[in-house]
Image (tube, rainbow, N blue to C red; front, top):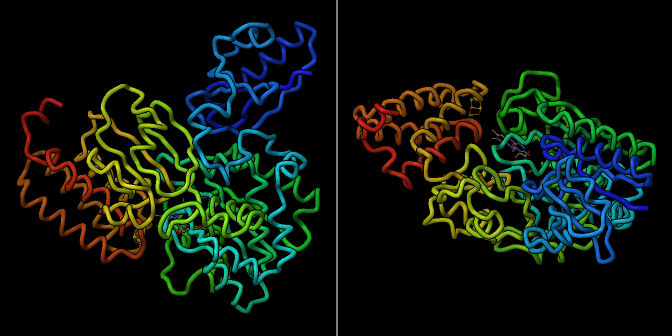
Length: 505
Ligand SMILES: Cc1cc2nc3c(=O)[nH]c(=O)nc-3n(C[C@H](O)[C@H](O)[C@H](O)COP(=O)(O)O)c2cc1C
Ligand code: SF4
């Protein structure tokens, strides 16, 4: 019997994967053929979606992007116009180092049998064998750092929670994924949810927690449904429900709810507002109890670490950035999607070699790395390696690993205004530099863009950025100057007076 694989990932659905699956089923019926259709997650080769795969003698054969009208040819001998050959030989995929995303796009995300057959649950079993203390040490030794943005060592956080004395401890997963151009958390929730469940179960065992929550952004209804179904399956199989259980919660729909203390407030049913630190969530987190809060990718990296050992993981990467990072390519890019690679790959390698340059065919002018609070990199800095420290040295940050490509039509002064506007819109309002400063920033940028007293307004802008950097309570206000100043430093021409040009815009 012929077996077809079609993603039910949100991106694939958005471009018609369901219609392709339905057309395939009815085509088979018309021809009197019995077929099996396996709905998978996505491989992350998004420009090829909807991507259909078929088992071949040497591996899976890919066809894409497919439409309902293209499916008839899949039943016939001879070359199909959408044939891509062996899927794992496509350079975009072949050159990756997929540890966390190894299964994503290959298996039915809700089949625990398929998950186990592909190495799933081996990490949790090893954690059970070696016990809590050794599990924490293994995660520390792997060098894993938080993938949500701040890059804090995951094992150190776990050790703090493990050492705290309390009747109740919690494991909280941050799946708010608010950064522009990022989708890795969603891909995993939809494509391999058991790896997150396993990672959280490992954390629970390591620190002695019995209850976990996953805070999923409200704009991800499909991920929420898939993950909730995975929780039900894990409970039915006894993976969850005895020592440890997890609840999925929908987020409140604000960027600041991704900041860990706001997230905890929101989980407690309150308005998402930042809590001052200390106390650290590791000691007084959810409902005042010791809490591990980590990003989806941080948890999802731990099954591999436990299965293959800390050293094998730490062998990937550069400097103090160990392991792999799932990078996400978006914006004006020919081949958008997910690229998991060891730290150290350069921005240029990702956007040019993997991404194939712009989709529009226009030259790349800027790449924003690390979400809306990340810096804009010009051509001259595209050879910067992606590693936490190397990015910092170039006044940028890695964030959640999102790269958004802009062509030569971008106006970086407009982007600087956007950064302030975004901050003003998303500010939780708790501290003055962010609440007021962001609005003053928009006004100042408007003056600069209107060519009014440009020099003194740029001086004011720098002052404002300094106040926001030094005086904000959290990184929303504290990092908004990063995109603004990178735009100013790297693209000064866009800030220069040019009233005549603007008047005609
Ligand atoms: C404004 C703001 C938004 C954030 N949004 C997210 C987010 O969407 N997802 C995430 O994992 N971390 C986000 N973070 C980082 C979290 O505060 C926190 O560092 C993270 O959940 C810790 O997990 P990790 O160590 O595994 O990265 C955000 C931080 C700030 C300041
Ligand atoms: S920096 Fe902004 S978002 Fe953060 S606490 Fe202050 S007002 Fe709230």
